[in-house]
Length: 125
Image (cartoon, rainbow, N blue to C red):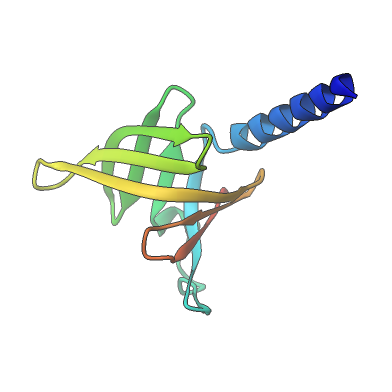
């Protein structure tokens, strides 16, 4: 029985790790936002490359871009809480820290929840 439980725990751990591995080393472009049941999407004519984006490097490097401005910093994933903490130097020179909860990540989609409860839908294409 203990062996079966151990095997299930290992399988779960590798599944979660593999799922999180899909987060790394690609740009995630803004696709939609849900807040209070309302969905907001960018205009269809806005190319993904022109939308806000995020990048999570395996080495902890983080980048975010919007309107041609790229901010660089670091990120960490708290595996117990599923929270992602990003830190970049803000335009005023002070650290800009974001606390996002990782809801879902697949090969081509990512959902994050911000502290206000808004769900950010990001796409890798």
